[in-house]
Image (cartoon, rainbow, N blue to C red; front, top):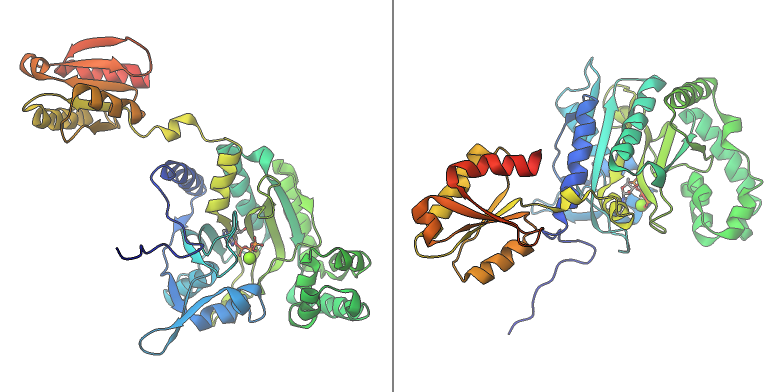
Length: 427
Ligand code: ATP
Ligand code: MG
């Protein structure tokens, strides 16, 4: 026997028993997005490598070591997208969607990063992303945050996540802060951890992220980002905070929150949970006013975020916040026992689907004993088994057995079943 081929490490199959939770999450997100009037955009999974290098930044973790980059048959350098923002900007520019208009967009799909796989961190993972374009004022920053807050409320997760908020200031302000930080950290170079020493010149703001205790101690006396802010960013941040306050969304200001990517300015935020161990960020985003221009377009203000679908599913499961109805995918299991009942069962199932809108009917196929069919009915999670045997077939009736209440059974004319089920299931 030849060796079985297995999936690639860090790239997961989504099994049938897991899909209902994914569908519930995705369905809820889509409902919230629709209620805010956001439109869907779908981009390819593969782009030119240069797109990500130019947007995310050469010295970020993603571009330095996480991208799946390969040469295609023409010798072009292509990359499996590690995130959606760059592709979204590319697509909008290419199709003129940013010309004299605003956009509020969302997308979902797989992203690819070559990281060390662990709980909540995979090599193929899924994001739902939102990007808005053309609005410079803080009300849109507030809107995207309110959108996420509404989502947590609908998912019953409000108590499980907290909002971390920061402002990075304008690009100039950040550059001035960067210089001050580098100057300070250089004086303490030998006390910094190895990663931070390396980042000190390539991407110094990332040193603020360091988990190393010694580095943290040094950072305690480092210059503070907020002392370097420009007036415009200060006012923008104050406006955002006052809207969030008025809306009752609480947050923590975290001056160390700088995000990994190059393109952010002004607002950055993360929703984090302490229920998932080290992979606690479930949603992250911010303002990126410079990116469109950096990719060859006109200067265009923009705000967006992306949430990690796997981490949100894990959170829903860990906290058992999944409504029980979500896990029930079948209402009725239709058993067909005896010659010729298979055909009648398929037709009856269709009749029920016509008459009882939304009814989920699983029809038994493949014959077998009454006992084995009833076992399958039970396992399907259906509330009712409908039993079509020889005598029911000739009488035009059906036996209905309540699978969740012992001994409950009725016989009805087939014409009356849909109304009866409607009454039982939906009233
Ligand atoms: P982290 O600090 O956890 O590596 P990040 O800053 O690299 O996150 P973003 O690029 O901001 O992550 O992506 C947005 C969200 O996508 C994250 O907050 C997280 O929920 C999810 N995410 C990112 N990388 C992964 C991954 N490898 N596996 C699963 N989810 C991920
Ligand atoms: Mg990362």
